[in-house]
Image (cartoon, rainbow over all chains, first blue to last red):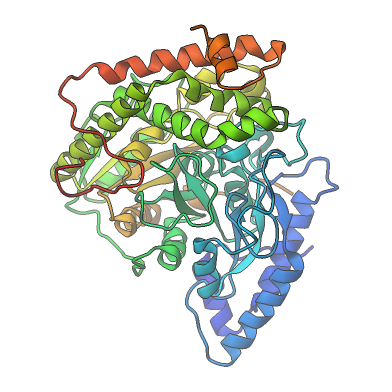
Length: 457
Length: 59
């Protein structure tokens, strides 16, 4: 059996510089792992990749090794295998957005801005990961794309929309991945798969080369096992690249909202896991203060109204001519934009403006804010596709911070009684992305949940 | 105008077996928007492409 990848980007980077591994070896491990659990002929495949760039990745890794040998060190991502959500363009192959309705040549096979930055940092792009169609639909087994399954239980959903990116990291196919977040699409799959993800400050990372869902919220962010690794990826892709920061939780004021009256369902273990996470933060010296998220219902509704309106506007011409080529759930969801008037959209943008004001005020009272990412673990695919979807989506609490636009990290905090990962979200002021990850890293220094691995293959 | 009429006016040809689900989704989505009118003192709207973390006119 081929050896698996190291546990972290930091560990791999150290091994590369110590000469105990090479970028070529890392990419071979990445490919072997992908073939073992996600091979196209495997009926129980993970469904993480839509397309792998094995040959190009091997070539890029060889160049990375040559550069390191010549003393040209591009930094912590040099020679590190990274996967990219198939909503972003890459020079190696088409961009499908997991949809038969999408022109795969969109973007003219030019690298998206974030992909260019990864390459400049020396990362090895291993392929394009699966997602919810156009970042909004549900898995559709009838379409010619892999269903993103959860490595903790292949009968369960990896989460959406960046499901393949999160499952690829959790299953050890890559050391980091790129996702996008409009209403929770980095945080939900990161949380459901037991890894760490960051919804970046809206506008902090260029969305050039990223298919839009809703311009008001679309953001690009890293997914990795740990907050420390997310920070390394962030430093490579952010406009104002910042060095990974460390933070001491002592003396920080952290606001908390359990959202237990705002949720549709709660899995066994979630309240205790969340309480235990708060105790860790408190024991590390943070002051925990109850601080309900202002206008929670209105701000969440604004996310849906704006997202569906903008998504409908973008997709309407194609929905008219290629209805059947969209997955059934996607065309239904996008048709929701028809529900809203111009006044509704304006009113939602007014609520969004108010949410910015209230967030500024909130972050004068506290340094960070903590709430559940979701009060449930990943649902089974059967429940997701055949059951009451409102129970799942009413238990996800990611849209709020997408509307506000603040950086928000999803951080593993334990498992449900069914053995599925649970997650909380740490939000901070706009622009403080590295600080949010530093706080998450401080939490992870006290806990081991991000180091748990699914028993897959 | 009924949802069916709205769909037709938008040029969306929805197969009959999907119609009920889409009508229910659109009606539920419409109901969700009503909460946005609860506060009469909201500030002016922000625009999709504008960042307004500071300043007062747009946020």
